[in-house]
Length: 330
Image (tube, rainbow, N blue to C red; front, side, top):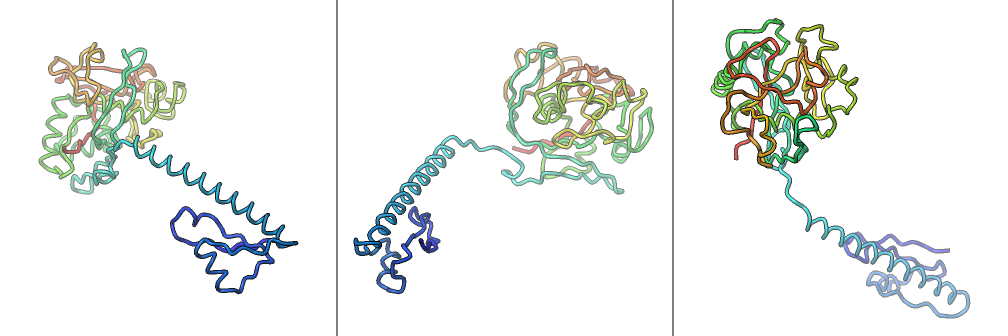
């Protein structure tokens, strides 16, 4: 039989190894206990039963020491390896901002936004070619929902929409109209977190995918679109209140339908062939702006994460709306 004495709580290599004493070993001698506290075990007489117990004790002690050394060496090596290969990730926590933001427009009207951490993803697909790796180096806020008619009216004082409902996404707004809305919003509710804008095409697709590399945020089977987006198969050719379908993995609603969403970028069909790999913001000039996200009358093919559409910045229609973005200042 063996008696286990609790190890010291000191953070040392040897402190991980319990002290094991043969039951026949005297326990009441201060000098003997002091010997264990100083890591110097008194030696029992090497005769008879005590000799066999001592030999067994030494074998167990040696095994414990070896296992402790092996464990500690492995742990230290892993820590060193991890530290050597660690790169600083820019997240909401690392720059001290909230993970969610509620933009108060007055009168109880708010715009809910979610922080999206910096990261890399594969942009494009076999149809929107070529697929390529894009790195976004700064976190940004993105509207959890499409901008509603109630929110638009709180800023602009009017509602241009065809499918009128305060909870519906605003539509029949041009890219130029969106710029006027954003300018007024920045003047009315500008915050220290940054300035509002439309998302870039890369920011939009990154948030839409939410870590997915499939056609849709939920996978590759278009049948699932019935649960995630209002499109031609389930919308009855009208827009619906925001948030009526399932969100993606990052909490964003209606990324695959309801209304199409203006993006910041100018559109060029071959832009992916020459776009920068870090923080692409679109061509320097153009004649049409990027539109993303499908809409209530779009097919599943036109509702996928990588689908690119475009329109004149002066064009408005009952399928065109927006989602708000807020980029962190440098």
